Structures are given as structure tokens and as C-alpha cells.
Length: 577
Image (cartoon, rainbow, N blue to C red; front, side, top):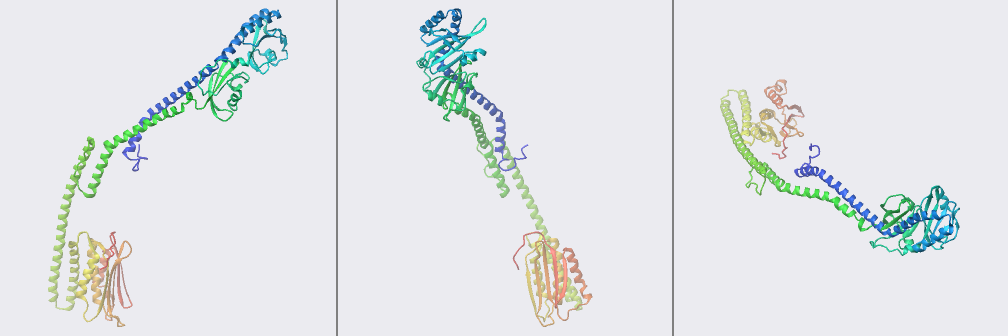
């Protein structure tokens, strides 16, 4: 399941995997915690908004009471006015007595369906037949509140309230009452937080009715880009927006008389009641903190109980792999039982490996000793045969017989050299072809150089490793080639010095090159029988055994033999003999 991406040293480690699966296990709990945090934050926000609405209601309670009392009075007065509407003076006297008794209204009156006010506390008749409100109410009678900077009757700034009146015939007119603005300024205010910036009341048309404190300040605090009419008909609400100066504010809107009058309060953006963002962020971080704490505890426990001991055990294994020595001190320090069992199993396995390796080394040593002894005995036997042949050579009746026996003795001695190299070397499967060729050449040159001829011998031989199977044909081939060179070497016709040049070198990375050049004297036979003699046949046969390419040429008084053969892939020595 995890092999697709958990492959490197970090992602594939035990710590990462445990922490990954622990995170997956904690994911449902974290999701639930986040959801609960969001619900708590939403509830806190709702509670804070309800608190602002409650304070708005408390702040506007006095205005609400006055306005509702006025609308209630108009509803009560409308019944009395309908009973006395036929008697204008009597109706006006009744309204005057009520206005004087209440001490709130500057004027109270009734406007009939024709637009005439004959029943009024001022005892003066007025004609509103061309009044805008009167004309609109004919089609859609409704309650209304507004502000008049100069009252038609009182001549002072007033707030007027109009309520439609209905009888058995339908719409009969409307009651109107005027309240001086200065009456609202004298209303006692409740003790609210000092950070309230402004409060206004406005009607269904979005016109401001009353303001808290300074009117200009209240206008500046209104939400930019909004007409107060857009909040008409809405239930109580709290929202955030920039004021006309660009500062972020909280606004609370509450209907005082639904559909008629509304109150709006303005609060700073950092109002303590609405400062829930910090708590929300803190609560939102709690699941993350819990997750991190769980990971820290899990990492500490995992590192303490397992990873540190596994690393120590891994170091012991690496030390054993490099040095082949068992740990001197076993792991301690409250290791879990499972890791103790793993360590004991490792020590037992390592001990068994050491015993098996020791047995294999002993067996290999015995076999090497036996093989060396075999090669040594073979070499001694070949030398014994060479000694017998030497006796036979001395008793040979003719020179040709002696030459044949001498050639045979050289071949036997070359084989003895091979077996000597094998039992003297450290490896039984490899020999140094360079050392073997150098020793063989020294032996042949010391005994076979022709008398009476000065021969210049040069050698350039590099160390070259050969397989044991290739050593014998290589040595025999070199023996035949050197013997031929010693037999036929001579001074050139032009009177120069006779020479023999022997070279062994690498030809590329995978081949060796044996080169033997000797000068040819005037007595050199060149007939076909000489070229196709036994020595030439043996050289060709040995070249085939070596999978070599043999080239024999004669030019400018010299005889050249080149043998290119494959060598094992080993480090190439660079030291010349």
C-alpha cells in the first residue's frame, strides 16, 4: 500500500510511517473538533449579535415608548373623534383638553376624507386636500411618522405621527399628532457601554427621525453606499460595513414599530461583545495543537521504545558485516522484549556464521595446501624427467638427436615453470604471465644463445594476470617461439648486431600482446619444410588454445611473431620488470 511513494530514507522510515497513520487515525476526531469549534464560534457570534440587538432595544426604549404611546393615543382618540366629528367646536375642545393634559403633544387633530381638518386642538381649520401624504393615503392608508423642521401649526421642529381612521363606510381620514423634537432630547437615557458611537431612528422612507447626540456625527457614521430605506421591512439584524469615513463599524438594526419606525445603533469594530475572532482562531487551533501534541508524544515514545534501540542494533549489524566480530556488550536500558529477542537471534545467527566461515576457511586452506603440494610434486617430477633427459642427451649418438631431446627438455622445463608459479603464488587459479615469461626467457637466454655471435637481447615485460588454464599453452608457445628465435638468430647481412627483442604488453583493456622479433643471419633457411616444422605447428596449436590471433612475418632481415590474446578483466598492473 505504501511502497509506491514511501521508498526513500525519510519517507520510508518507521517514524514517518507511524506518524502518517497516526495522523490518519486522528483525522476524524480533528474534523469533529473543527466542526464543533465552528458551531461554538457561530453560537458565540449569534449571542454577541443578540446582545447588540438587546442593547439597541434598550437604548431606543424611550423613543419606542413615546412613539408607541402616540400611535396608541391616536387609535383611542379616533373612536372619540368619530363620535363627535359632526360637532367641530366640541371635537376641537376635546382634543385641546387631551393635548393640554398629556403635556407631550404640541398639536392633535383629525383630517377627514375630504382633506379638511375641522377637529383640532388648535381650534383652527386647515385644508390638506392637496397634501402629498393625504393623497397617497387615499389609495393605501397606513401609519406614518416624519419630521417637519417647522410645524405647520406650531411653527417649531416637530415629529408628526399619522394614523388612518376607518368607519363602517371604509377610510374616513387620519389622526395626526405633533411632538416637539426637544421633547425627545429630554428623555432619560439608559446606562450603556461608552463605546456606542451613534443611534438613529428612521421611518419607512429612510428619513432620520431622531439621533443620539450630534446629528452630523450620526450622519457620518451611517453605512456608506446604503440608503436607510433598504433596512425597512427587515427583522432585527447585525452587520459589518464601512461608515462614510471608510472606518469599519458594526451596525445593529431593530424595528421599533414594524413597518413604520426603526432604530439603528453604531458600534466600533473592536467592540468587546463582538470580539470573537481571537477566540475563534484559538478554538480553531486547538485541534491542530492536539494533533501536534499527539505526534510529539508518539514520536518521543516511538523513538524511546523502538527507534533508538533499532539504530543501535543496526550499528551492531554493520559492525559485524565489516569486522566480523560479535558485539562485546549487549543492548540494555529497558529495551522492549521484542527487540531483545531480535538481538539474541542476531547474535546467534552471527555466531553461527562465524563458525561456518571458520570451517570453510579451514577447508579451503587444506585444499590450497593439497593443491600446492600437487603442483610442487608435479614440478619436481618434471624436473626429474628433465634430469633423466639431460643424461640421455649426453649419451645421444648424433647432434640431431641431441637437438631433438634438447627441444623436448625445454618444453618439459617450461611446464615445470608453470607448476612452480602456481604453488609459489598466493592464488591457485591465477598466475603472473609477466613473471613467468621473464623467468622462462632468462633461463633460455642463459643456456641457448649461440656461440660466436654477439646478440643484443632486450626485454619489456609488464605484469599480466593469466588464468591457470591459459598458463600452460602460453608458456609452451613462448618456449617454442624463444627456442626458434635462439636457433635462427644471426647477424644481418649488412653487418649489424644480431638482436632479440621480447615484449609483453596490453593491447587495449581486454587483450594482451606478445611480440618477439629476432634478426635473421645469412644462414637462415627459408624453405617451406622449415616453416611447417613441429615448432611452428605447436605454436599454431597453442595460439588456438589461447583464442589468440597469431601473426608471423619476415621483413628487412628480421623475423617477427605477434600474438594477441584475451586476458581476464583485472586491474592492469603498471610496473615493468
